[in-house]
Image 1 (cartoon, rainbow, N blue to C red):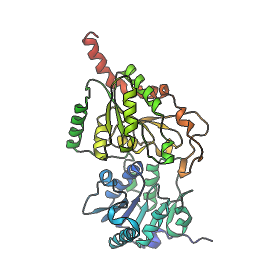
Image 2: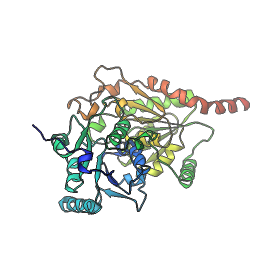
Image 3: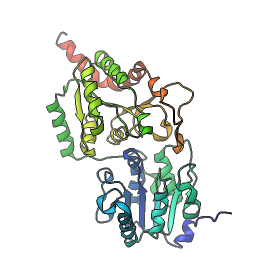
Image 4: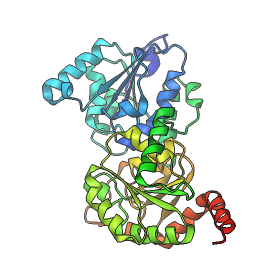
Length: 381
């Protein structure tokens, strides 16, 4: 029989944890779905120290409030290689955390082992059904059951409640990224320089995703985006902004050349706060299942998300918007951290029709388009 992991009362007897490490080693979307839990801990009574074990880009999204909070950037130069990981464990140990909360998705082995090596006595993790970390988690952490139908934001807040922070977990579950006035003004000026027409609603389009094999399966075909952009500009009068990362420049350039009407292009920007500020200026974002969709939702921009292999109920941007899926019976196939068929080339994404996407987009543009139409009538056009 497997030994049961110790409970919170057994590991920190008679005391509420005051020094907490949050493990959030996923991508952009994963870090943003962790933000409500981090915000809840910031407002919790008695928390003296909050550590964030994440990748370096999380600095821009979670904004650690020093000196009370500290980001341990897992992918930073000091923590590279075997010696770097020893240094990471040593730094975590020095901060004397008494509780580790491994937020979704933390099913890898390193997410489970690092808190153990750092001598953090109480460790909470979801009861994962896949991932190498689940094989040792029963011996090393308190495993918390989760609702397979719940969004990852809700799963993370549930983990907090299980660790004794039920009142803190009652915060608004909508992820937030607060921009400064200067960031908003700079984004507006940047768009104006690019040729923004303030009389027209601005629709951002993000055709990318992570470049992994699984990430590529989540992409809607470029020619489908081109058809959508052409129909969108013709039927709504909207202006389109293509948002592309450094690895998506060629695709963005090809799309911009293929569409009938000129579009704006923001390409190669690696500053997430700059991208977020630009997205905050848009009336809407159309995106694959990607971190950019979560970024837009965090600044309050509605997102029409295109889903294929992944489960929107679990990973959709948590905010205003809509989801478009094909009606193939095999979707979703990668829900709950399960890998999809290795030889599948994601026909579920190709099956999404541009007309279906446009139908979901139009309601979000109606209020913005009315002033433009009224102005055209006054000009006699």
